[in-house]
Length: 639
Picture 1 (cartoon, rainbow, N blue to C red):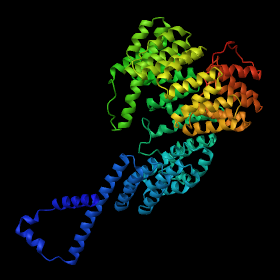
Picture 2: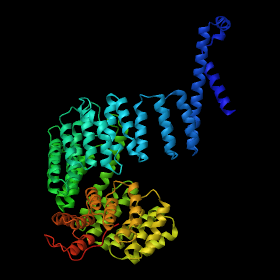
Picture 3: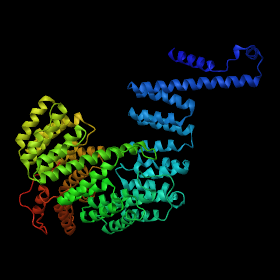
Picture 4: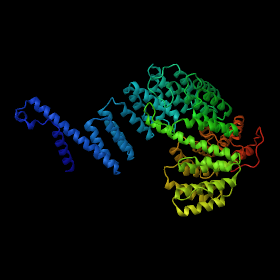
C-alpha cells in the first residue's frame, strides 16, 4: 500500500507540471479531441516512462533507507530493482558496494553479472568484478575481467585503469602469480603509442612487486622512450617524473638481492630528480629515499640542491633540520629549522584550495603542514634540551597546536629525553601530562609504562597498568601493553591471557595476533599455531615490516630457510631495524652465506649498536664486528 501511495503522488506531481491546457477552451477541446493510434501509443510510452522512473526513484530511496537502518540485504534488493529499471551503471555499482558492505560477496558478483549483461560495454562493471574477485582471493579468475575492462575502456579511462592495475593487485599474497596473470592482458598496451608510457610503468611496478627487479628496470627504461599522457596520473608530480618514484622504490627493494639493479635504478632516479625542470617534490622524494637507505651525507647534498633551486620550500628546510639533528649537527639543525619557520611565516597558515580544484590534495597538504609544524617545534624543543634549557623546550612545546597534538608532542619529547639517557627528566615530563579524561589518563599511563619497561622496571610498569585496567577493564591498548609487560617478566600464561582478550576485543587489529605468534616462535613453542596467528596478522596488515619479520622468524623456526629468507628480506626493506637485521643474518648464516650475513649484521649495528637481539645473535654466531660494540645492550623493542 505504501508503495502504491508514493507512486500515485509521483504521477500527480508529474501531471501537475504539464502545460495547463484545461484552463482554456482550446485546452478542453484538445483533451476531448479524438487521438490517433500513434498519439495513443506515444501517450502510453510517456506514461510508462513516468511510472518506471517513479518506481526506480522509490526503489533507490528505499534501498538507501534500508542501508542507513543497518539492513543492507534489503537495501541491495531495492537498489538492484532500480538498476534493472534504469539500466544505470551507477546504481549497479551502488548495489555492489552495498552487498560488500553487508559481507555478501556472492551477491556482489551476481549484481556485477547483471550489470555486465545490461551494459556489456561498460568498463566499470569489469573493473568492479576484478576488484571483488581479488577481495575474495580468487586471483586466477581475474584475467578475463581485466582483459575485458581494458578492451571496453578508451582514452583517459583506459590510461587511468592501466595506471591503477598494480594497486589492485598490491595486497595479493603471491605477487609472482599476480604478474603471470596481468602480463598477458597488459602486454599489448606496452606497444601501443597512446598507452606505452602507463603500460610500461604499470608493468615495472608489477615486476617489482614480484621481485623481478631486472625486468622492472627494463620496463622503467622503456617508459622513458614513450610519451606520457596529457591526463595527470600523479598528485604533485608531472607524469614524466613518475618513473623516478618507481626507480626509488626499486633502489630500496633490490638493494640487498641485486645491488647492480639498485645502482642502475638510482641513476635513473637521480637523473629525473635533478633534471633542470624537475619539480621540488621529486627532488625531496629522492632525498627521503637516500635517508631511508641510510646514506645521510648524500641526502644532505641532495637537500642542498633542492634548497638552492627552491629556497622557499619549507618542507625541505624541515627535512634538512631533522636529518642534521639526527646526525647531532645541533647548530646547523637549529639554523635550518629557524629558516623553516621564517618560510612558513610567509606562507598561508593553512594552504587554501589548489588551483586544479583537487579538494583531497588540499586537505592532504593542510594536514602535512600542521604535522610538519608540530615536528619542527618538537625538534626545536630537543635542541633546547641539548642546551640544558628546559624552559625554552617547554616554550617550543607550548606552540604545538591543537591540544591533542601538544599532548603527543610531550610524549615524543619524553621518548627523546629517555634516548639521551635523561630518564628522570623523561619520567617527569610524562607525569606532568594532563589526565582529566580517561583518554588522557590512558595515554599518560601507556607512555609511563613504555619508559619503565625500557628501564627494566617491569614490576612498576605492571602496577601502573593494573591500576589503569581496573578502571577500564576492556581497554585493548592497556591490555596489550600489560600482555607485553608480562612477556618481558617471563610470565607467558598471563601474557597470552591478555593478548587473547585483545584479539576478542579487536579482531580486525593485527597487533595481538602478531605479538602472540612472534612470542611463540621466539620461544620455539607451538610453531604451527604461531604461524597461523602471524598469517592472520599478515592478512590484516600485509605491508607491515614487523609482521613480515615475524613470519620470517617462524618459518626459520620451522626449518623453512628459503621461505624465511624471502620474508625477512622483505621485512628489512620495509622496516630496516637492528632486530630484523639479526634475524636475516642468522638465516643467511645457516644457508652458508656468511659474508652476506656479516654485511647485514654491520648494517644492523649502524641502525642500533645497542640492540639486544643483534648483539646476542653476533655472540652466538661468533661474528666479530669491524668496530667495537657496547657490552651492555639495551632491552629489545620487540614485538
